[in-house]
Image (cartoon, rainbow, N blue to C red):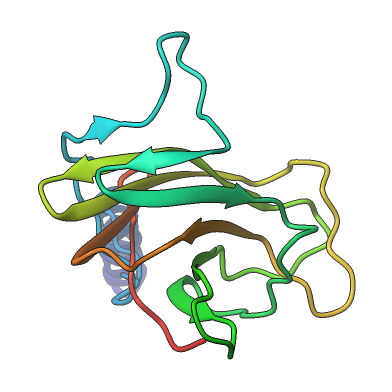
Length: 166
């Protein structure tokens, strides 16, 4: 009888563990939220390419390479930076939040306006072949002549990027 109770108890515990795994028992990341990519007027040209500079709405932009702008923020999100001089452009810096030599990377895949909101869609790569040395972290940078009223940055998988401190 004692062996039967032990077998039943073990079976119940195993069933409870299996049920927890199958129902998605996992930790949630409170800092990340998901959303659908909203509709917006894209800056891509007729051939589907993203011009490196131009205008979006009434904002002049220029996409910068990682060599032109150092990215050192290890937090995931975006921030707006500006040089400490008069009449300098603003830099919207989107940080992947990882510092790894495995080749993680991030790039702007599309952007445009939805009313007064600048919508930026980024694509993240787990293994891009890019290696970051020292303090550098994966980021994407968009230079603009003025800050839009609202900014929405979202990954192609629907993850929203929150504003962070530089």
